Image (cartoon, rainbow, N blue to C red; front, side, top):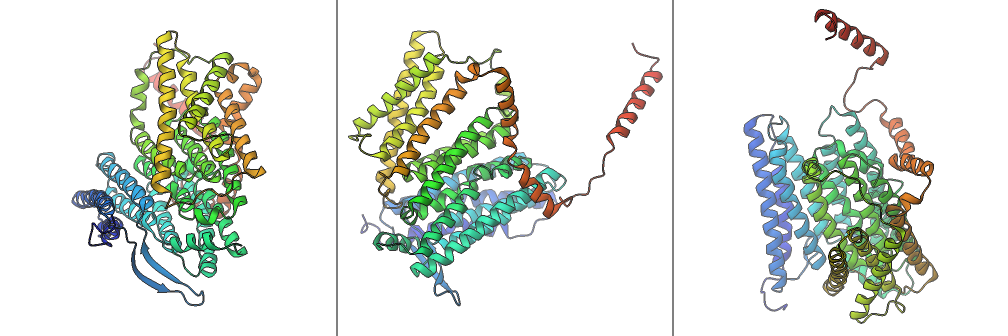
Length: 564
């Protein structure tokens, strides 16, 4: 295949076109006029379309054999002993992420045209959107951790301005400031990890990191520390518990910004974990810690999500739970499965946010009536069948889950997922509907494992193979995952009816408020920014406003001749 295409660097060139076009489209200054708005949004929309076409062209040229990475230049860094290369990674992981991100950007750019039509600042929005998308595409295609870090720092600053797009919303301004606390801390972690890797490996290239990690018997302490710093950055970038408050509160931003963040930028933590997975597997304690934090985030965010009444808040907590799920998969060494999860959830979340305005119309079409709570018997039957279907599918693939802890983790994850389908299906009265639900669950379990196998086959060269997974800590995390998912499934099913009313009310109240862990972040944010949230608001005297309202009502009644 390598000899079919005569220009080996063509794929890298196509990939470079994607961020370049968007960044160039964002450069012209924007005025608050209709002509400027039309010009800016059309320019950005076409730049997004060109980026998608370039991604598809890169896919084609890669398939035809143009698979050489693109190394453009190197910038010497005095005093550190290594250079900062400007390189583009050309591999299956890059192409999958590039195609996904450009497709999402096109959808968001198209949606933004009508969403902000008539807004006097839509030209400025289009420029900021192009800057953010362009810098994030640079993150996606970066061939080394140095360029990745610079790209994610630039993405964070441009996204910060998008989150503060409506300067007259104090909550949006403060939420953006709260996000900057964690983002800048994660950026610092990545900078320190970059320096340690450069000095320890002698190169920042992801390929060089992989080769060094695979060939070195004892990993230096500096690289072990770098792995822990990367894990810390992943936790902060992915809004894991208890650092998730900013992700929930940035819903004050325009809907296209929410879609861009929840369907793209927020996955930067998972992307750097996949890129540096050969290093992370050499520090298993760091990976297991990431998996444990991810599991805690999954459980808490899944429960909190069920208590939310606002559509965007529910979607934000859902994103938090899914990000925790990805970190759990990464911590268990299921790197191809984490990539599959990232791609699927990104597409789903982009659609969910961009269609969130139609949810109320959908709810009006639902017949009145409360949800049925499954019985304990039907729930246990669903979980048992889920385990049998998942384990049986693994046997079809020639795997013995009892011998490989990796497959134990995979079987548990798939079993809990398809058991939810069975729980809902068993609530139907007709036998044919229950059989249909069983068939759907079996098909989904088999499809899930087929996709996992395809991703393992397609991306094994781009991510690390799991390290030895027979340790007591690894098996403990797998067992804890199984128990936690079962408890979570029970609480969302028959457990709701079996808990005492007082305990249900207390749990609902505390979960609705996110267990109050964001309180200390609010205090820290107000220490830095206090009332400076972009706009000075007059202080309200509620007692005086109430008296004035009563007086106005009485005046209206007297002028109308009394109550009718």
